[in-house]
Image (cartoon, rainbow, N blue to C red; front, side, top):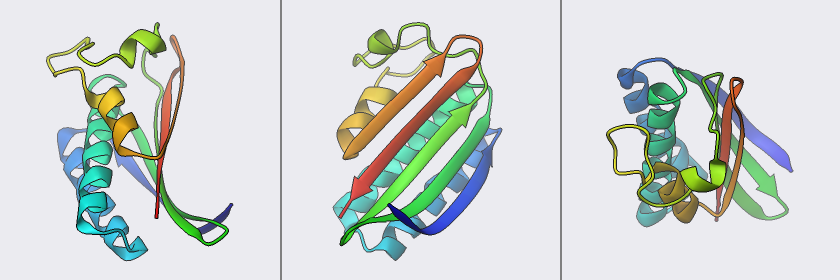
Length: 134
């Protein structure tokens, strides 16, 4: 997989979530996604960035424009060094939350993107990687 563009963002406070959402839209437009695809990408970016700030106690977002043959993809990695997720399978269920949200951030992001990976270790943090292809 070739990388056309690569950028990292710090995620510490709620304003950083807004920045990531705006940057995700700009990247989606630049890569050539249509309006519906842009909305899916921005929604996933917003949910995962918010999770990183609220549940992971801050971390980073990494955006990459990737090529796989003739396919263009937008890969986003959200990483934190927070408390980790004790039961990833449970956390992926709609409605499960440890906060005040609706419990749709992880599961909804998975549905919005083509590829979804999550790695979490209790006491060491969580990394969620998603990719949307066109």
